[in-house]
Image 1: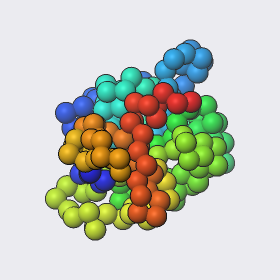
Image 2 (image 1 turned 60 degrees about the vertical axis):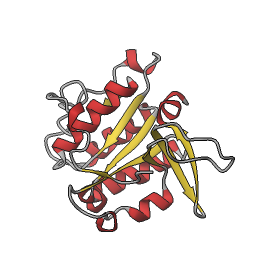
Image 3 (image 1 turned 60 degrees about the horizontal axis):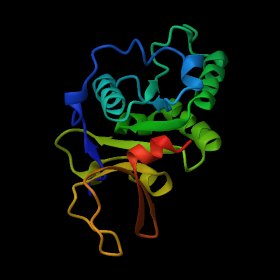
Image 4 (image 1 turned 180 degrees about the vertical axis):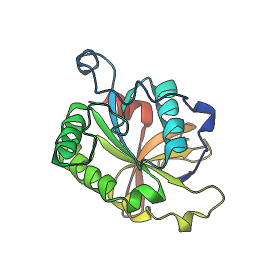
Length: 193
C-alpha cells in the first residue's frame, strides 16, 4: 500500500486551467449526479493542485471547487472570506485536504479542515497526503493527520483482506484505527453522499 504520494506523481493528469474549479459550485451541479468536492490546499502548491484536480476529474468525474482565485472572494482576506469558504464547504458533498507539508503548516488549511470535519464528518472528509519528491515517508509532516482522518491510499493489487481475498489494484479511502485499515474504493466513496 502506498500511503503518501510524491509531489508531481499525478502530473500526467495536470490541467492547464483552474478556471472551472475556481468558480462557485453552480446550482446545476448541486442537484445533479455530479459529486462536488471542496479541495482545501496551500495556494503555493499550484502544480500539485493542478495535477490532483485533473486526476479527480478525469478518473472520477467529480466537480472540484478551489477557493484560490475565486473571483467572488474579497480582494483582501477578511471575515467575509471565511464566511464564503464556510458556505462553499457546506455546499460541496465531499471535503479533501491536499495535505502537502505546506498545507499541514497553513493556518487557513487547518481552519478549513476543522470546519470541514464539523460539516462533513468522517464519511465525507479525507486527506490526500503529498510529500516533496525524493523524500522519505518519515519526512512527511502530516502523519498524525493520517491517524485522525481518512486518507487516500493506493493498493497495487498484491495486498489481501483479512479473509484472504485480494484487494483490487486502485485508489482507496483508508481509515486506520488501532493498526487496522478499513478501506473503501475511492469511486464508492465519491458515490456515497
